[in-house]
Amino acid sequence: MDRHDRNRRRGQDGESRGFFDGTSSKTYERRRRRSPKQNSDESSVPDSPGLSRKVAGPIQLLTRQRDDEPASTSNQPSPRPEEKEPARAKPAESRSFQLATRQVASGNERKDVRPSEAPQMTSKSSEPMKDGVKFVNDTMDLVENIVEFLKPNPNFKVVSAIGSQTAGKSTILSMIGGNESQDMYRQYIFRPASREAVETSKHQTLRLQIFVTKFRMILIDCQPLNSAAIIDEALVFSRQSKFSDNGDNGSYVEALQLTAFLFQISHTVLVCMDHMIDLSLIKSIRLAEMLRANVDNIAIPGLANLDPHRKVNLVFLHTKAKAPDFAKVVVRERALLLKAMFSDSRRFWISSDETKILFPLADIKPRKESSGAKPTDTETTLVESQQIEDFDVSTNRIRQLLMKLPAHAFTTSPDTAAIDELKWFIMAKQIWKEPTFVRTTEALGKFLRTDEMNVAVQMENFSLQPKNYSMKR
Image (cartoon, rainbow, N blue to C red; front, side, top):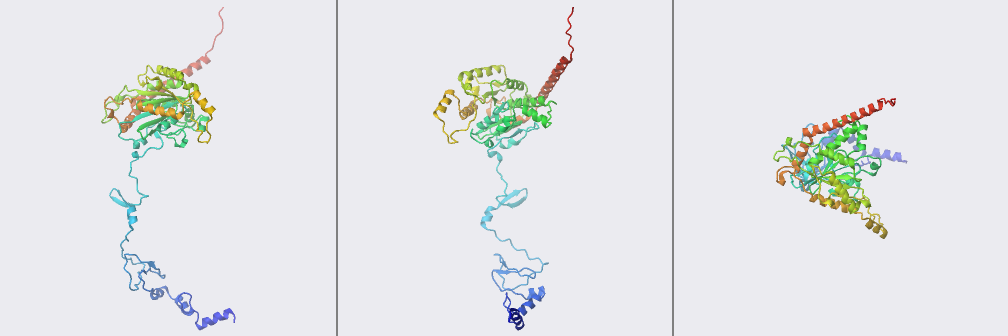
């Protein structure tokens, strides 16, 4: 008897049993052919205290009973799809979830917000700054990003840096703000120019950037003066200036306006020069000295009148200095020469101490201890004989000097607490938009443009003028 004959005999005798419920194959076949309604009415589920919930439909689902549902004692018919079940109370949440849930008020509404979704209610002014932010943007508009980090603190100082391209302005301000010479460039407060940018004669800073240290010192970084890279960028991107149609004159007048603006809102200005003495930079400083706002048009609520004769401290830094530049005789002679150049100025204050006028700064070099190599006795003797001061030592001396320099008051009031950081920003904003300051800057741009046109016309006339070399007999 083969396998097919045995299966046929089992089906005829009804001895075969179902795989699921132990019934015969004929009974199992009849139940399978019944309608879904009859199957759902006749099927039953044994009573169980943990399994009592039913779902409408031909399929019976067994779900775990909730804690707030009473245990079922009998099989109740499942509700039809169109009938709505009575609303049940929301199950009690665990205590850990209740502690993690926060109630956040938004107007008259209240909603549950998890810790990851809860908004930070802490003011940004209590958090220290990490990088410098824009103070004057590319369109020469003063922005208010720094207001979030200012406090009503009257004991503050404003330090700015001006200079030529790649003179180390951003690097010096970053060192004053707390960076170390061995930090990575991306960790600097003001991003310095990379080696590639220096080799290709590109600039890094555009317009003004600002930063507030934890010691409440406001640092402002300025774009380079007399920069050919900024002029070339303005010509490439067709960036027109409101002061002049010529890209050369327009960029120059914009740089003068930024410099004059820093003279009016700063306590100390650091003049960075990579060679001594940069006469073009000195000329730009004396020219920017004449551009100033009319403080009579500036009125700040709760603040005394601004002092029109206020002076700003000037400190000169000689970056990339070599061994001969550190000689005391050389430093003294250069300091006296710089002081003589500004002896007739009414807006600049230069210390009478010759050691606090000019600071030579050496190049930043990687420490040999970081590479595992130690300096030899010959190298140590050579450095000591040259008397080159370490860069970190020089920056520490500059930090101490900035804290000791006098902070000339912005107002005529003898009260030193007359102006704080927030009122200083209001003052700076009004100076930037003051009509006299704007008109004077525009007049300078027109004068430079007219003077250039006159020079061009004179040169053209001189080249076209016929010359008679005949001699009289």
